[in-house]
Amino acid sequence: MRLFVVALRLGLVSFGGPAAHIGHFRREYVERRRWLDERGFADLLALCQFLPGPASSQFGFAVGFQRGGLVGAVAAWLGFTLPSAVLMLLFAAGVGASPLLAEAGWLRGLKVAAVAVVAQAVWGMGRALCPDLPRLLVAAAAATLLLWQPAAWVQTGVIGVGALLGWSVLRGRIAPVSAAGRVGAPGRRRVGLAWLALFASGALLLPLAEGGVGALAARFYRVGALVFGGGHVVLPLLEAEVVGPGWLDHDRFLAGYGAAQALPGPLFSFAAYLGALSGTGPGGVAGGLVALVAVFLPGLLLVLGVWPFWQRLRTAAAAQAALAGANAAVVGVLAAAFCRPVLPAGVTDLRTAGLAIGLFAGLQWAKLPAWTMVLAAASAGWLVL
Image (cartoon, rainbow, N blue to C red; front, side, top):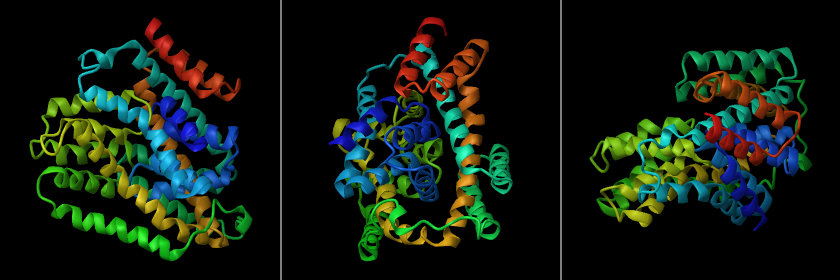
């Protein structure tokens, strides 16, 4: 129950997309509750960044798994996903359907809050994970490359290259993690293989379904299994799967996507909106839930499948050196996300710049809770933006 409540609170205040979610998770799980140290946090983050699917949701799922097993993992995922899923289902039913919604001042304030949260995440993780020149250079190179070419495959590639550079340059500098320092129980390899087999079965068998619930689940499962980078990367894939066959018109698709960006929690909850309005399947709440579970399921199955192998691998000295390089690249990925699209979307004039600086100061130096900064940003946006 505690895992669900903690995740639910994060799901209510985690505005700004995956990069901002990481900042919220770090404050909650590392700084406040100390469920993870910086290194354990970064290792889990690197794992989730490598896997296809929604990285922030996979991260929360993994934290729940290491704290409470499978039940804890499901509770953490439900808590983090529930607020955005409910809001997207309500939006699909017509709540907040005004075309002027995207211009509301309080929503612009939330975009500024995302700027402050991501900035704090980059600052904190940069200091912890890039303590020397080689890792600073890896982070800078990763950020530069992603700003030049922000494709999802480039993000995965720079993390992989960062791991290779860490393995070749940092071996001997990074001490391996002891068994006592592992992030959770190691798990059994056979259990991990069973989860991976279930993941593969879904990818192979669901596309055989024709019409109705099966076809709806198959399309959303395929998106969740193929998308690397999460967040905004899911947009073109979902558009091809839903708008392409005529299940939903383009205007309503874009209206839902705009609403999803303004809500807390994972952007993948957009699937609930699409499933609810889809011309195939049961529609309504039932259709939304089918699409929601289908798009998240492959990424969560991959976390369970890879978990026992990851736990053993990360205790090797060479693996730790590779992880150190990968973590430095992750800092660069976050920095690139901050520069584009988070910063230009939130800071558009001197007023929003001043608000962003004030929110950052509240988070970084005054150590105020993130939810108070989110409420302050929304209130400021409603009053003055």
